[in-house]
Image (cartoon, rainbow over all chains, first blue to last red):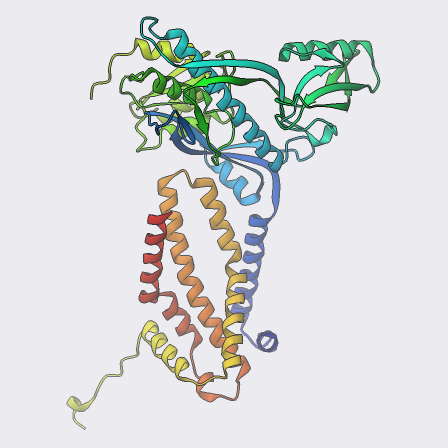
Length: 374
Length: 140
């Protein structure tokens, strides 16, 4: 190898000018190419993804279930290279968001956040799917379906390193300074009180359940160093945590088996709840239509917005999927409509875009539809 | 000499020449350790050369894997890249062999550029890679 390198340099001076220019140009091109595929820039790229069955990894009762209901996944990557940034700039279907390492979730924490949100989303899907079935079923037809739930606390879905928080992701906050917390609003109110009564650093006592150890009611007290910031002469409290109200399911029939999948996030929870509802109803709720949708389902049946809506619309429009109806959260509707109009500006839309605020909106819309005829 | 008796000199194409040169190279008895070294280092230099291209291709795949057409383009580019890797690694293997054995005249006479051309467009290798792609695509 060394012999070859030596030989190359010995012969190089004897070579023609053209040869030397070619060699230097190749080296410059190589260095340029190497730089653009290695040097990272502080951006996150969001791309369209793929559609998957809404009941992926979920089994209700003894049998494997299939439905005509789908949810959508998108791909994201943080801290991308220069080349990836250029590809993002070039294509309208891709989105670029600034990514700040010091304040945004790290890729590992983001993954953990996604897994927790998926767990909460699946939990809410089961609760709402069963509750809505029990609420809407024909009272004259007997049914064994049963669900009881119990409020546990506020689950921490994300933690931020920069806040040096003692609380971990997946902790469930039950009390603040010994005051019981029964909702996110409760938690906010308690924190509001703190912000107006003190203007310095303050240790707030959070009582949390760690590792879902609800059976033993094993509680850990965390001294959480409060971070303040001043706004309009008022010192405000900065939690900097992702929070969701969390319920456990006490009694459930038929049983639901949830397996780990590669997916993360709760954006498929509305469609999962719809699929569960259809399985329990034992009738064709979707009326033969191929349904797709997105939205994070809350325990009270309301639907929260999700990220990457544009990419989800583009994904649903990929040839071959053949969806008929796309359900989108109300707060995402305008952005979704822009992407929808962009795709179908020169062609007939292949699916209907329907905005929803609650899970009932989905059921009511499907109830109002005629049976699908080819 | 009658005109009839003259035979035109036909220069073999670069591809055919490469095929002949490759055969000559395989027939030369090199030390086993030299063969091993030239093969490994040849591959190493090739990997270093194609690394940015391979990374660019991988990043392209990540960004456009949702797009069926883009995925097909990726497969085509990956196929071409593998063929190029085959050609370049053979080129460097011969070049290194020459550097290790400058006293071997028959080795020094080999045209490594012809080998580069032949191995890059080697139909047998191209078909094997294509079959592997199809098998991999079917089972993944």
